[in-house]
Length: 129
Image (cartoon, rainbow, N blue to C red; front, side):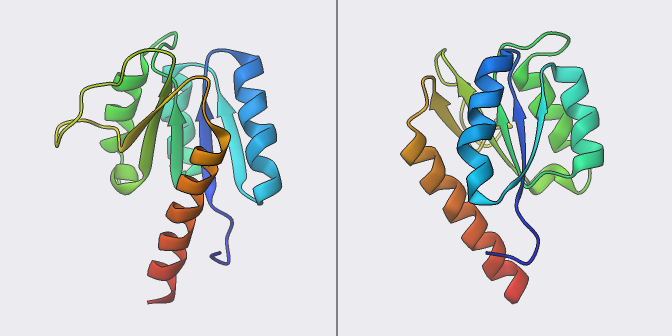
């Protein structure tokens, strides 16, 4: 793991879902911030500088895809990992997509944790280079 804990921004308009995600991830030692709407998420990305964003797609103010695109436009956050987390179908994929992956609710915790550990390990390797 890198010297600084990986910063994860959890975005979900359902307060209980966001809290559950935080409860799952907090024991891993990650620094976590929660937001519940798209506009606040973009502002949080500016100040919190997340390494990973777990983004619900249906949000008030600005939907998850719009918020992800806005975060991608913020230097230096263009390179952070943004994972869609939704009960709906996967967002559009491909080079134009603002998402690096998609998890369907209810999220398989083991799969999400394994993915985040790989991201953190890669982040640590880059920091050591």
